[in-house]
Amino acid sequence: MKNRQNLLPVLDGMAILAWGILLLKYSLSGQLKLLIHPNYFWLVYVTGVVLLLLGGVKIGQLVGAKGKRVSQFQEKHLTLFPPGYSSGLLVGTAILGLVMTPSVLKSETALQRGIRESLPLTRAQPQAFGSTSKPEERSLIDWIRTLNAYPEPDAYIGEPVKVKGFVVHSPQLPDNYILVARFVITCCAVDAYPVGLPVKLQAQESRSTYPPDTWIEVEGEMISETLPDYMKESANKRQLIIDSRTITRIETPSDPYHY
Amino acid sequence: MSFFTLFFSLLVEAMPFLLLGVFLSSVLLLLIDEGKLIAKLPRNPILGAIIGSCFGFLFPVCECGNVPVARRLLLQGVPTSSAVGFLLAAPTINPIVIWSTWVAFPNQKEIVLLRILFSMAIAIIIGCVFSVQQNPQPLLQKMLSKRLRVPQQLEQKGIPTLLRGGTFILSGEGSPVAMTEIIPPTPRSKGMSLGGQFVSNIAQELRELGGMLVIGSAVAAFIQVFVPREIILSVAQGTIGSILAMMLLAALVSICSTVDSFFALSFASTFTTGSLLAFLVFGPIIDIKAIGLMLSIFRPRVILYLFALAAQLTFIFALGYSYFG
Image (tube, rainbow over all chains, first blue to last red; front, side):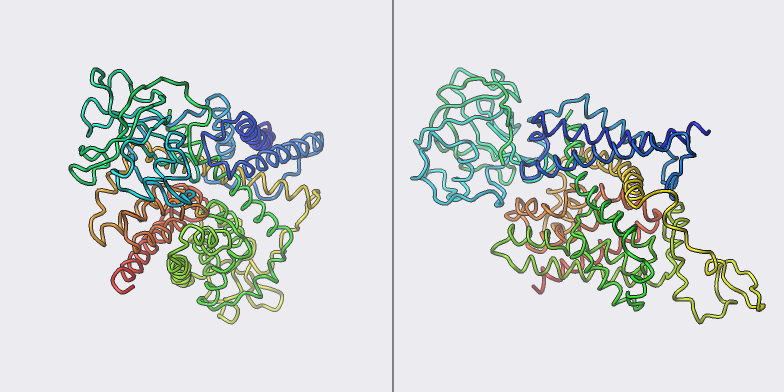
């Protein structure tokens, strides 16, 4: 019992230290960008440093008080859980976080959240559309942005396209169409918002050539066709489609999300 | 796999704000003389609730940070109405959140204004409802109620001792005195410097609340992964349906109030202004991640009441706006 009493504050300090290390690991390894928006990077970084310091001081206190009767702060052992469980949970979670690498969100998540060709208006709105950027230099998000500003698909027919994204198989689309999609993040991975455009494969290809979650670069030109609405808002809809000329598989980029 | 990513994404996002809240709470504990603070706060429940809900300006915290501060306020003996008012209003009525809502809805200033107004109103109404219970002990989670620093004897002055609850002993003059009045206040420092206590308190609160945050985030991530959003959105037919759907979404997605207006924007095209308001008002008050934290203050039944009251009020306000706005 006495041992347990002395162990608890150590566990507290360990929990704080472990979280400090975890947050710093995310910050320094660049994995943070799989979790949250870059605007909050500094917050996590500062928190990591503060936690590390706190944990150090806390453990220092215990070491300093060794020998003497540990005069712990008055209010202790008063939690929802039995003493030690909460710290244990924190330490356990931190270790789990240190062992596991955060993964890139998958097409499954994209389908579950519903892919759109509209953007949350929060994102930088296009100052102008069309003439300022060359169509072949636009990223997928630039296209979505442009489309947001001027949604008429026919306006873009014939423009060259070269975009990167991951493959999503939409159950609404015919077999020779895939979606090329990316996630947009406003705060953290929890609110990641999938946007995408349909890609028409070449005549001899079927979607099984490009399994879901493969990262691809699509080159081609814009056409408009009436297709079943993959956004499920109506039965059929005339929409902007990339008529693919070449599709190359690429590595998962180190910054898979757009902001 | 995506469960873990979402889980850690929530935790990493919330941890800085939790730390900020715990910091403020520890500052409150050590630097503010609770006696003076309480004496200055009005006893009147309505005024108390109003003042409590404006504390958000002093402590700009979101819904992960407000729980440690509200908990500290309650422990220091701040009237229930003020503490509940703070708990419900602080995540919305604070400069950062007001600013981010302003940025997110540049063309719809009425959303900013109504978000503040509705959140205030809800916090004040619920604060008043809770002020009926003057002694917060029965509301609080058992372990916490033992930690109450200042027993709420202030209201009880003037009430005959026969009508009061508690333990009494006879004093020298033969008149009964409440036990709580003669127990000397706990001395602050016990062999530890102010700084040492500060660190100890932060460590303790981080441990208690961090554990709850882990559980809350796990539940929220689970729901995110296994309940498709489409189900919620498909319910959203008509005025009432869309308000209910957005409230449900607000409770489920558990994002911080500082950024939830940006999130709400992504629905701006599909949903009515009334239902967006419902999302913005209800989200900061209740979300799954915060319920875990709130369990560290209140008993489950109290949270249920809070939840039901806040949900009904939000619904009524949003509906009222949809019809008359």
